[in-house]
Length: 205
Length: 193
Image: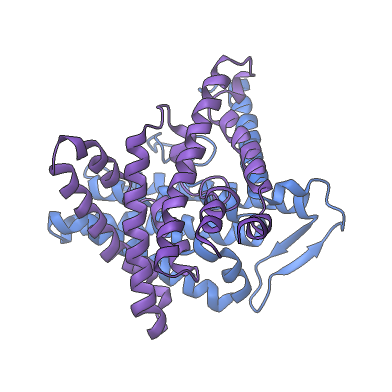
């Protein structure tokens, strides 16, 4: 593994604490977490590559605004695709789908793409690894919130509503489904992650 | 709804940081106090961005059925205009330099875009949109001030090593969010209309 270790690799959520807004508030069920995580995971390498192309194609004054418009275009198209795939899910995610354009990780990928001169495949590999970790973290955190907070698991499903597997009608800890529970769970998961790193003799992020 | 109701809901039960989760990343990692200049910069940035996006949505996008273009309009029109105004403000004099620099820095962020989106998508009129976006900025700033105070206390607390820093701040923010969400929007509507 020769990828450079910085904010992009390997733990953007629990190490660098980037891209948290969708995870705290909107990823209260698995379907939402997966859709948002996938949006960020797709946008980071794609926009990173697009920004790198802009660096060679566009004059310097237009690079940063152009990259931001590209990010906005990606968010708009992704929101339209999700609205067509599952309208109820898109309605539930409300502002968080267009907000992918201003996600901290997306903006960091754009910045990195615009200034990367020396990085060849290593820069892209770092972005892909980071995107994968973000998707995994989003899916794990949203699944945990839904299982413990709502007693069910919902899967993205083409059509009007997500497919829901009800496990219990009296969930053990409803608070986890709310933004307050999202903050608390993220804090606890980050602490467990740091504890595990420490036990393995790794540096705390 | 009355303006007071809009302000109270934006500050408490719909707090942009603790309920919508906007601007969490800088709030978790920040290590400096929240000065009044940050409040002024944040309020001006949010007001400009929210009112511009609100106007574009009400006058152009909604009538044409093009609401999906909100992100593109924000990044192509609103953010550059806000950045331009912030830079002009920063060059206007030493007093405004810090405020202008802070506003320029925060013009493209999930916080500003999120506040602009929630304001634009609400059914508010112009003055209600002004009240809502200004109150949202104050709510964010107030939450930051409270988190800074908590951070100071937590630095002195005997916490496990893994829990120190951002994890403790996140858990504390969760407790604060419970308190803020406890001030119910329905209760506010009943009390102040």
